[in-house]
Amino acid sequence: MANLIVDEGNTLCKIAVMKESEVLCEVATPQFDIEQAAKLILEFAVEQAVVTSTRGGAEPICAALRSKIGRVLHFTSQTEVPIAIDYTSRQTLGADRIAAAVGVVCGMGVKDALVVDMGSAITFDVVEDGVFKGGNISLGVAMRFKALHDYTAALPLCEATELKDTFGTTTREAVEQGVMQGIMHEIDGYVGRVSDADAKKCIIFCGGDAKYFVNRIKNAIFAGRKLMFTGLNLILDYNVSKDNI
Picture 1 (cartoon, helix red, strand yellow):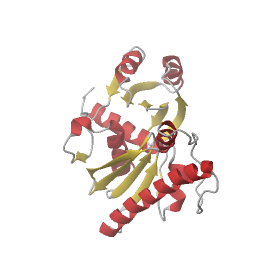
Picture 2: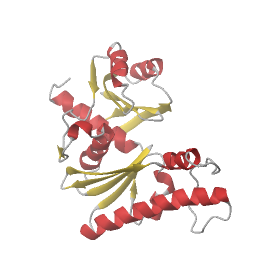
Picture 3: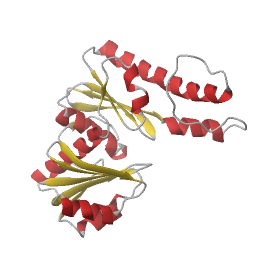
Picture 4: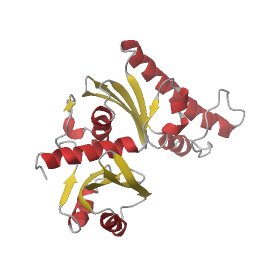
């Protein structure tokens, strides 16, 4: 049985079709397209789906999908998941952070990890003994560039670029490397902190901007989009098995 995974983020709506642990197909568009989803449902004989959204738009997507297939799970921070969550304000915990942790623990079989998710925001989340323990949230790459441009009179709007180990010799280079190297130092700080506490803790990167930084961290694992898809797929199967849909 194939599952449809819909992950509506701040920038893109990602859709994947998964069967067990394999991603059969994935697409990314600015907005959810029910016609596109319907084609995937027919092509892969999808019978159930999971939807999560950081934009607050999950319910209309769920309603549209329910007209095509029987079982649709709206995944929120309150949905049952196959790992323990040790977080004081779970009602405000991002579902994407939970899904990534489930992907790490249940999908990758890693019980102790620092998960660095580099999307619109950067999250640094800790998993210990298979339990989500919490983490920190920081500005994402694009957000930092936009803030420098919007809150100053003369600094240019720049974009993510390759890291260099030098100082900028133009204002554009100074902004580009200031942001990119600043994030790298931030990551180094978190990695050093968790590694000092537990040398066996895995460092796992995901998210669209991770590609700029992952090769700078020794023994880091780049999980890419599949980590989120895997986590959401496991959460869907878990809730189907408990008849929660």
